[in-house]
Length: 226
Image 1 (cartoon, rainbow, N blue to C red):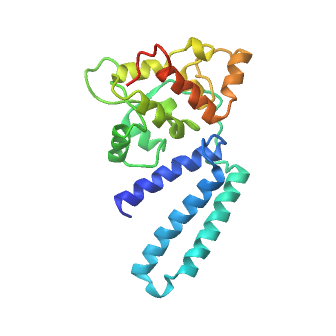
Image 2 (cartoon, rainbow, N blue to C red):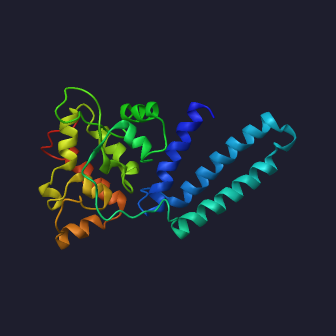
Image 3 (cartoon, one colour):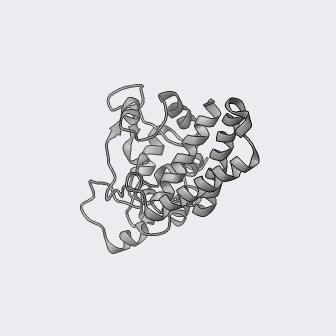
């Protein structure tokens, strides 16, 4: 598998995971079609190299159909392994190796660092140290990997400490929820209780929750806009 193909598969996996939890911001049916087409193309390309006599358009169409049906079935049934519903968000930070070991993301350390550079995840400096990297664990929960990139892109240029503080600090405009909680649709595990107004915000569709967080960054008087 080439590096480009591997990263495309990883990106597709993040979207599929969001769709399994019902929090994919786009059209889940189109996602199924796109992923099935992508995988079918990759398989056909392998066949052209290894078994040329099997690589024709009819094989590719069959592969796409089977994959599309399978993905649609998984989404409809809510695959138990991928759709784990998290009732609360963790507040711990993870070492890079822990992110990989705990299967928070299916990628290598090098890929994880590239994702930070690409504004897909973010890291902080470990407490009491002047350098190094740790990853707030909340950003790997539920639909967050799908919703976080546009937020990090909007915060581009801010210090890492400012980015983290913004994401985990309760905001008046969000009924005292933190942006992290709104993105995840779940409260931090340290929150004792939820007010009904907060619960209503957490139950909004994913794209609406994302819009509210972005509005905090880009709205009038916002101090962290790039």
